[in-house]
Image (tube, rainbow, N blue to C red; front, side, top):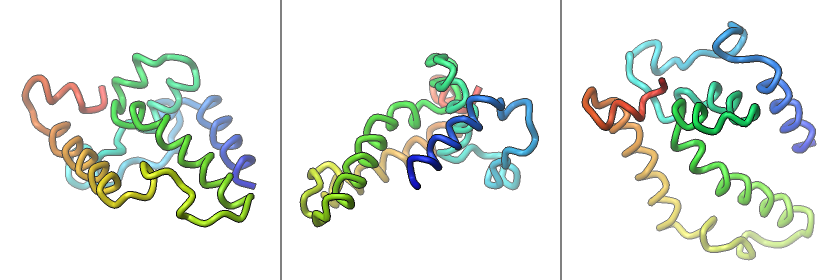
Length: 128
């Protein structure tokens, strides 16, 4: 079920460019504040990534591109843990240690703040 959903989403983002199609939801945070949230540019980055345009994907949302390996491994390990009936304690420390999770949250918040600063080099973190 999860795999089918991920394949359908990947197909959707591969076939349709969020820049050109209005059925993709806009960022409400950006729409109402004019500031970029940590996820701004993620849809466009995913489209570019699925087409092999890593540089363009990175320009839209660098943090997402850097976190994709961590997120994918976490998804695979979670599915494995569920299918084998293992407990959460079998997950590696990188996915269950509160310090690591809080560290990731701090990185996301820092990215959120820095990408909204209107000076070099921070403005490069905003979706291009």
